[in-house]
Image (tube, rainbow over all chains, first blue to last red; front, top):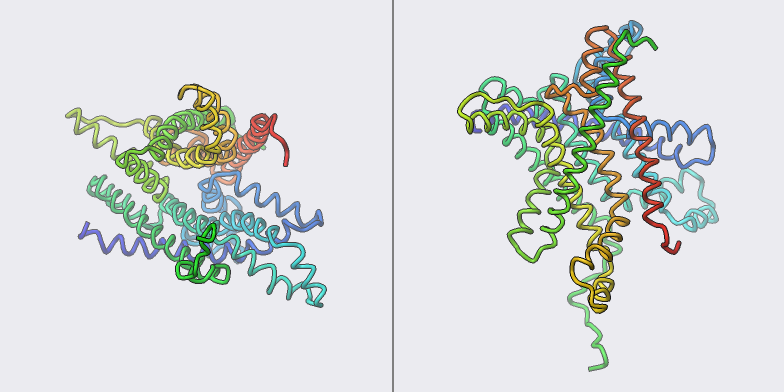
Length: 236
Length: 223
């Protein structure tokens, strides 16, 4: 374990880069998709529905292979501005993971948007707030707060699916473990070490999301419940 | 679309994908039943074991579990047998997916069992029903209804996770597409075909789950 520690650290760093980029790009993509999905206009909600349906209905591995191997089939892609990204496995992995998590995040966000009470939006409108202001100050903050636990789950799913990067030659945590197994056939050591690294990652993320949740919910928490005088039942 | 004679192979692969997914789901349900019973047990050791199982399996990537069981199984069996034994892709894949599916169903079934109103069990006991009858006639029908949405999700996840088995060489839908993509130099075409087949499977599943849910809810007053 100690000998391979530097390699696992490098693998963890690559995994973290993949996860971070995928989550940020995916979150940015999920916003317009979620709002298109809740729209009443057919031209908006139908493409969003199709996008979410396709990305959630097929395995991530297929999506990854379609982008990494599939993009090579068309000569016109070689000449496009996307080619520097699609040529190397890292760019393909980020694209595939981001497109995939965008579909899941859009679905989470949709649940949050629909859970914001209609009365609050009407009240904001009655106060003369414009649509952008309502979105920024009323809808999004509440939608994010309501969906935080689901976001935490999604982050962990992205951490876990990032291991697929090893199938397109990237040396992420799983890739490093597979490399060690191929060299030394130390199967249990390598894969159990990699498993431990993932467990530490998921544990840390659960903690951070939990802390964030307590902070965002602080206005709803009843202050010092323990210290408050408790009304005795039956006036004892 | 021209599949250059690979259509039949891909259909065989699709059949294998369905078979692995269905078998994993059945084994996973059995494991999940025991897991949920262990989680709700009064024995501390059983609860601890079940908690460790679900935490470990759900906190580690599916691909890693599959690789560990595939390569690790080969090492373990070779060590036991004293000669080189190779675990085949089907066995390792099925085993890994069942373990995975078991962890998810454990959580779904535990939540469903806990959601059945305790008064119902007490009422059944007060009527003089014995424990097996209570479980069969009162608990299980309600657990089925409450667990169905969760189990449906697990099924969709398991079906998509079967694609990972292609990494250890089982010739299911994904691996067959791999081979065809390599032979014809048309990766996009064949991975797109695989994606469409997966999409078909999930669509049919979603419809089937909705019908099952409606059936399980029959006789229930609508809110």
